[in-house]
Image (tube, rainbow, N blue to C red):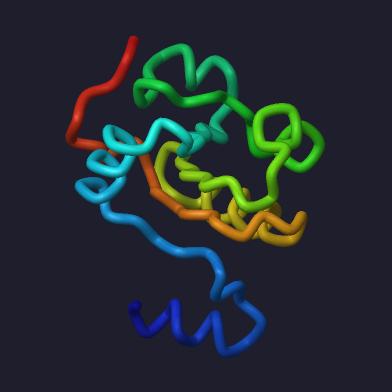
Length: 117
């Protein structure tokens, strides 16, 4: 964890949100079909290309619609966006709603394993 992450966690940041390396995410997604992959970009962004198997729930509605795909608060959620900023905010929202296994995948811009168009 970097200096900024430590600083944020010391001052009210949410330490329960974990960051995930792309390689680990890809391996885990291949092995565990129960992981829920969430793309929090807008619909038009999702349609232009997304990670295979992702569900599109824009950040603006994630708090109102997450229960439609993840009823169990212990579900493993991998969250991403374009660059990582919206996914970080979405992870905070999900954690506040009681989800315990929330991982910030970051941005699709760096995803090296191909996208669905």
